Amino acid sequence: MPTARTLLGRKAEELAAAELTRRGCLILEANYRCRYGELDMIARDGETLVFVEVRSRRSTDAASPAESVDDRKQSKLILAAQHYLSSRELPPETDCRFDVVEVRFQRGKPVAVDVIRDAFQET
Image (cartoon, rainbow, N blue to C red):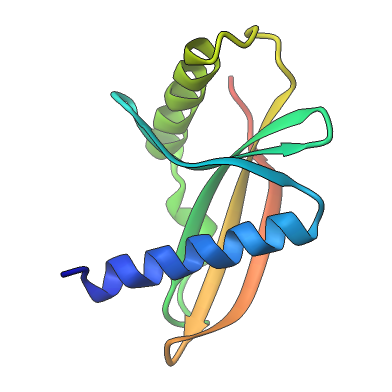
């Protein structure tokens, strides 16, 4: 039986996918798992491949959900993205970016879905 946190995460991912689609992105894959971790979503925005991390919070007065994507998490996402590119035989010079979608809930209902484009860079 899924926990409340798992259910909230699933709802946040559904809302994130809907918002990205509304903005013209095509969702290619969800929950891509590899030995480096998980990519919540992979989307295409025009010619750009977008690796999406979805973060949610239950309260609007908590810290920004995106703040939890620290350097360690970014490193894992970058490794997972490199694995994805390799596994799909895409060239390393493929135009890519990392977005973070923040979903805020209050009393179990979504109150905001914000997309932070190009939230961080591979260094």
